Image (cartoon, rainbow, N blue to C red; front, side, top):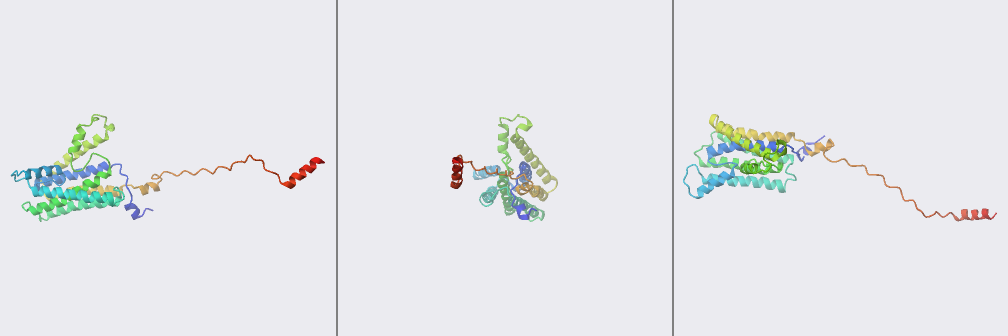
Length: 281
């Protein structure tokens, strides 16, 4: 029977890891819709924050551009990616270990839930710059961590945080018009771009027709879905028990018989003398 330790320390084989990455991407788009429209920056799209910071440095006087928010978002995204990435590379034996994925996925969702609670309890005011920076701190760290932990799940073009590279790779793909089953990477890029686009629409509609807290809460709930996927995923321990994990060991062949000596065996002396006597008679 598999123990809890075996279950948590199992290394997972995730044949549909791109599904997890798409779910993360959907949540990312929802949150970025909120942070851009309400906080004046992005929690995950660091390209946009870099442009905003450049405009601020150039002293472009625009009330919608805030250098401090871009700096906070960039630094916390970097920190989330650094902490999660370095621990995943140098501390965790395998970045696909179940307990590591459960911990990181849950903590990222927790940071989003805390942001939603702050919005729901009205402790946050959009006039308050410090409150804006606080929300960006929580959300940017969460999505920096997400980018770092989702990349090793599978080698796919789905970064979960930005679609620019996916768009370029899609339209410059030499096999762009191949059959549906012949170009998996193209299909993943299309799914990624569409997911991001739809997530942005859903985020904007929630902001318009419901409220900010619900929008962020929805993203946190969506990010919890991969936690369930990881809990249900089969690991190598289970596969080995079913005879699927490790190859069957072949029975070693029997040892070869000892070689037959071609040297004639010398008869005992007494037997040889008796034979000579008989021949003389």
